[in-house]
Length: 164
Length: 196
Image (tube, rainbow over all chains, first blue to last red; front, side, top):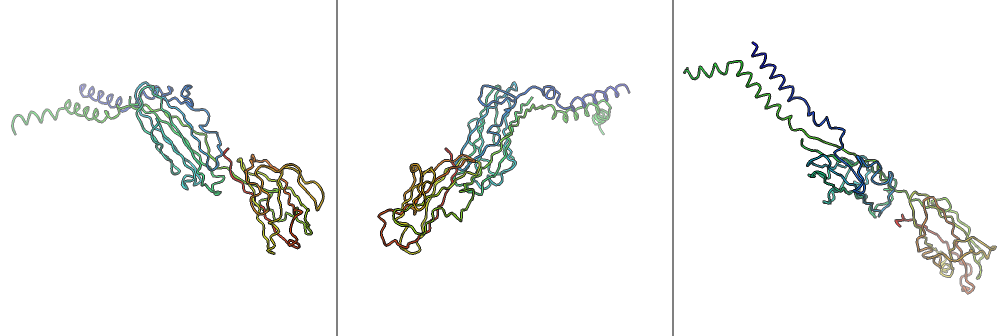
């Protein structure tokens, strides 16, 4: 009887210990593993100020490119994912009068063609590596008067994942 | 049943063996949870792209239908008329504007072909029928009432206004065949978004 109880106890303890969520990950939540920078020299947990001006007014023919940098300081190799979410484009993207493209690490630009979520990069980054992310917008010269006052909002999300 | 089979049956039936096998199952299931992933997210937000609004107005209107400042019904050679127009950038982006004049000679005498135009940034001076514009002709302005009036784009910041003066003269050497001639002139101002 005692042996059975002992075995049952071992079983329960083992199951509980294996079933618990990953403790090390939650124990280090306060440590920022991704750092961002506008110039590649000064690093903060976020960019603090909008990548472009808060409300950038564009006219046909205008083109703007902004770059920010992502640094892996997770302490080891990790995977970096860059996702762009366009929440409201007023048809500017769909009519192809407004072009937006994002790239990471100098790769090919990923065109954002419609409202929604776009995974633009997913790459391996070594410890301490700095990855530039470029966001390019262009208001096509042929855009007509119908595009006046149209707005487009977007959010760029950077996620670093490291297998523990 | 052989003695080996009997021994195996007893072995499998024992509580210890069953407990050990159960542990193996738990370990197999639990091993999927040992792959821990650390993630960290940063969101870069706060940007709204807005297409600008371009609105060019003349005398605070989008269409001016009753501009009579240049009218003269009894014009003779040497007479001139002048009038001002206020050009306004009513949009929220910088613009450049140009202007063109189009004459309609309904009587086929081609009065417009003889009229001389001048555009300045000045004001109207003198008295009818010899009203003139002060100042020198602005850069890129034309000299006829049937063609380009301002060909070099003039920049206007959002909300800014500019007053131009248009002077129309019937030259002293105008042919007598133009007596009683009439022409209607339409000015068209075109604003274009400015990237400079």
